[in-house]
Amino acid sequence: MLLEVNALDVRYGTTRAVRELDLKVEPGEIVAVLGANGAGKSSLLRSVQGLVRPAGGSIRFEGQSVLGLSAASRVSRGMVLVPEGRQIFTSLTVHENLLMGAYSRRDDVSAEIARIYERFPNLARRRDMFASVLSGGEQQMLAIGRALLARPRLMMLDEPSLGLSPLLVRALFDLIRELNRDGLSMLLVEQNTQMALQCASRAYVLELGRLVMSGPAAEILGDPRIAAAYLGSSERRH
Ligand SMILES: Nc1ncnc2c1ncn2[C@@H]1O[C@H](COP(=O)(O)OP(=O)(O)OP(=O)(O)O)[C@@H](O)[C@H]1O
Ligand SMILES: [Mg+2]
View 1: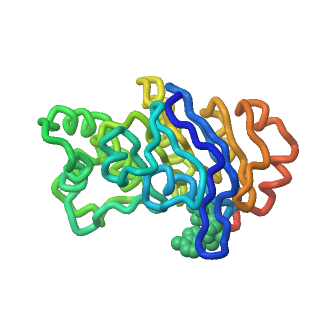
View 2: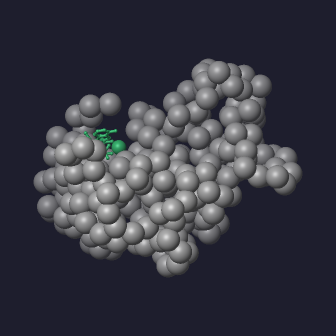
């Protein structure tokens, strides 16, 4: 098992953001996590990455507990989060942003950076510009490129399609599929239910921190309760 989360609890004061959650990712899988605003999706990813300390439960990566590890050590192990809102460094250049992804590595990353520029020609053209000039889609590509430089074994994406045009959403999901075909396992948080379920093998649906449904993506895609649960979810508070 690549990632195994058991009975995870995340609390902020009296708010129970994640309750007794069991979730796993097997090597090579794309696993989708769905749910409306406030369902606890980001809290799940942030606690797996080590940015939030869970109030209870266990998180195992490749068979070992990572609860005692800092976020940075988890990155070194290959657990890499592309956070909600991308969080690229707008006062650094595109190239400097990519280098930040490799900050914990001592080896030469120039060949990998060259591959990322091949994959994302828009980034190559803007390599010496401030990241603030990038479009939303380009910023998302940069955030993913930066995460790839950390050599992920599990890439966690928190709402990567948020704010992108339909065309860029399609390009993003093509990229997600391509990275997965190359062997990258992913935990994908999305409110774009349709697109996420089309590329995931399995999915978990959260509601107010609780797991309300899980199973093969194709089954969840065809479940009328999902359609009902997501009516009105396009009204984003972001
Ligand atoms: N730092 C925090 N302090 C206090 N409460 C928080 C904090 N972060 C999240 N919460 C609360 O925890 C619950 C889960 O939030 P979380 O951000 O994990 O949900 P989400 O599913 O990612 O939502 P969204 O789709 O809006 O990103 C919400 O009730 C939220 O208000
Ligand atoms: Mg969130």
